[in-house]
Length: 152
Image (cartoon, rainbow, N blue to C red; front, side, top):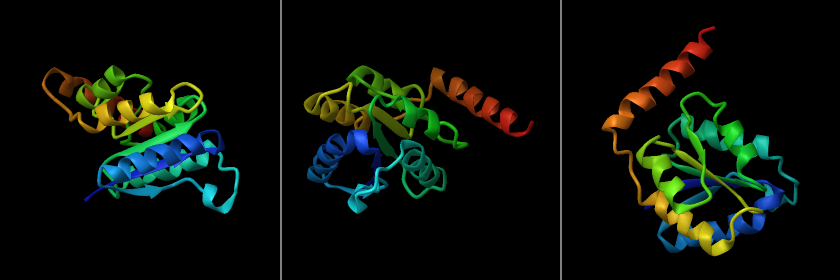
């Protein structure tokens, strides 16, 4: 069984629960980085950083982050060295996030996409793999600039 990490802030708990059930129906083990189970109001920076750090450490190959727009969690996840997070609000961007950019984390906004579209976006992202080819040099350049910024 494959394992995938998921996390959401209070604006996206309903969508997170729907996607979590959808993944479980597809035989994924889902590790939830949201802290809604304790009735806290999770702040997206905390959730996104924790999940992205787990990806960085190799605990999971992929993760899904959700907030109101998908923007904030993408920004935070991309602060973690080695993590590439892509905001996906349609199936094409989800597919290209994997195939062209080798994004390990996809983000979505609960106030932007509806439930059925969200499931389709997740399916497209999960079905896609990094194609390398012409994109390899671009991903290598992303990693180069990331290291250059860390070494300043």
